[in-house]
Length: 483
Image 1 (cartoon, rainbow, N blue to C red):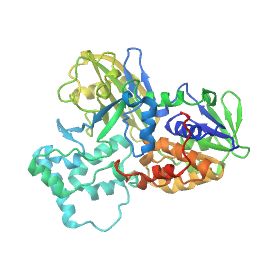
Image 2 (cartoon, helix red, strand yellow):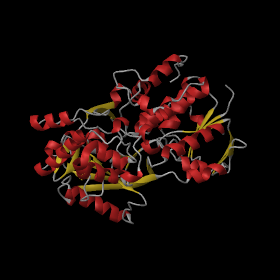
Image 3 (tube, rainbow, N blue to C red):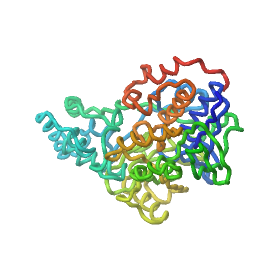
Image 4 (spheres, rainbow, N blue to C red):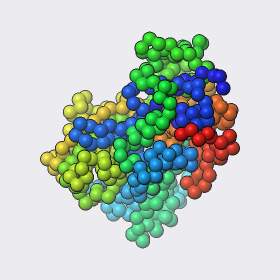
């Protein structure tokens, strides 16, 4: 085809689009990346002391065969480590297996009774027949007052950085395990931990280089003359179909795929009518902290993957035992181990003003929650702030997106990816890559973009079954063996 295709952003979405176009023999694309490396929010950093850190608690699991096959292609079958999920909730001075709501037997007896009583009341009432107005009401109507008070409400404020009453709940899908009262009671009576739920109960992680190694490998196998780093887009002229770079260069396009945050894209465009709506988009920021430690992890966390923290004795909502993902994430696994913590920030959930204060809060929180035993064991610290951390599913989000995204499409721009599409429910790495792949397929073949517009379909498929998105790919002409 003769159309000029320009892609903004070399994260999973932009790379997915470029990979698919190249795979299918399309050579008229250009990928612009503002930074000096690929990966976007899925990049990794190795610091001066030899510790590797991800930009968040990423793991590799997938809803799509195409994504899985590409991961094998990029790193080979020997380039991965495979893990059984060990995720836990720390509260009341103890670890409770995740999902919390299926394992309340681990709570102190009075709170276990409170949680069960709340579930029984829900069962007896049979629901009030009224649709919840927001995520807060959905929590109460799904889990009862006890579980809501003990875990669901405090944890969700910590992770989203906004009160549940300001969020919608259409994003939930498979991401939250609803409660089966009989199952909960059986777990209590049988004294059984219930840990099998969830789409990521098994996952894999790169042997070397952190999550960013995947996207480095992807970019390296694409034609380098079609990827430009240090190419920050400062303005988009939809009338003339041109993008302007910070270098002063102008690049013409026929179709544009943008993966920059949707509000930034519209602010930099000439689409004045869309700017008031774009300013209503809500997001939170994320602070990532890496703590490198001497010795070996305490027995309580030695086998764990990640842990959730709903209480106010620590600032973080999640901590990953990052050295458990790969022994190459530390300089020498015989001498060191590592933790990676995430802290959310928003206008209604501020954080301390200085990096030193924020780090001190995290270290003290790790001592409070017994993740580390002594400050003296800390040999390395690293931190960064992601202005765009979570695309918030705020009340009124869906009508707003249903206005903005089609309006951009009509102007020849597809805004896709974690913050390009602003849909948290399809913002994992596999979703993001497939948004790029499906955009490329639409350009080439006019096919539907299932992941963006039908998350309830792609997320409902278990790994053992075919995903409709994969079936659509299989119906297209066979890919050329170019990669």
